[in-house]
Structures are given as structure tokens and as C-alpha cells.
Length: 212
Image: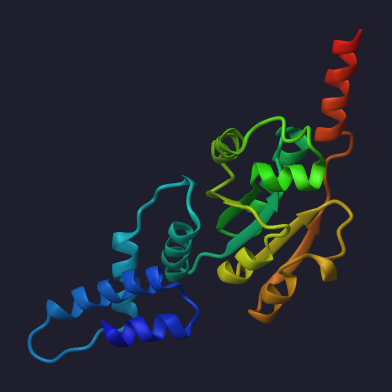
């Protein structure tokens, strides 16, 4: 247990994820006679057997544990983030395209306070729980997690996804968290949004209609 715990922490796992992994290792060893060890294949199988297939809204520490299980099965992780205030066809097309890059799609969502800092005092239109619930209902999205910082760089560096994806006219070299992803052997990609779809234009159209 201590050996796997130490190895997990050295590999960058959180204390919670490393503890879960070490408990699985201990469970394997105690089933054997005498002094024994566990193998990587045995540990991988144990992770697979104990994996909870829950998808949807998760806290950061829970997400880290789920990524350990996903990676133990050889799954590739795709990460993107945004406000997703009023979900529209452009968002859906973008998320579906992102999900096809790997096996699991993680969507990080700005908290209400961070949206206000980015978009102004009259945003968001939809509060965080509602925005996350709608995203989690999409078939292409595996996990939705909130973040409150100005950028998701800290979260990205903890998760170390295989693919970091953004849309629009972003410069791949300037995307927050991109260096962590590339240093870990991952890729940073920019995908196109669907033309004519934007939350800002939807809000403007609604307000103009109300003003008539």
C-alpha cells in the first residue's frame, strides 16, 4: 500500500487518487499467500473492476480519481472549457468534434462569479448548476467540472489531458494550460465554431424582441 501510494504521489496524483489506487493494490496482495506483490496488469484489472461508470457533474477530486481509472484502461482524455451560458448549436457541434479526438471529454465550466468578471454584471443568464446540467446531458460529454479562477490553467495542469481543445481564433501557443499539456506529451488544438452561432447574438436578439 505504501509503495503504490508513494509511486502515485510521485507520478503527480492527488493524495485522494493515490490513496484509492494504493487501497486497490493492498486488496490484491492480501488475497495472496505469504509475502507477495502486485503487478501492473493486476492493478489495471482491479481499477477496471472498481471503476464507477458515472458520468455527469463531478467535483475536482472525484474527477481526478475517475481519470486514473480511465487511463488505466488506455483511454485518452480530451479537455475543453468555457462559460456555456446559453448552449446553442455551435457549442454542440464543437463539443462533438472535440469528443471524437479521444475517449473521454471533460468540460470545465466557469463559475457565475468568473463569468461576471469576463462578460459583465448582467451575465451569466443561466446559473452554474443549470449550465452544468445541460452540458452533462449531452451524449458527447463525459464529465463536467466547475472552476472559479480567471483561467483553467491550474486545473489543466492537474488533469494533464491528452488533448486540450479551444474554439474560435485562439492562438494555440497562448492557450492557458497549453504548456503543461505539451510538456506531458499531449496536444493543444483549436477547432472552428459554427458560423452565425453565439450566445451574445442570442441575448441581443432576445432583448431586441422584448423592446418591440
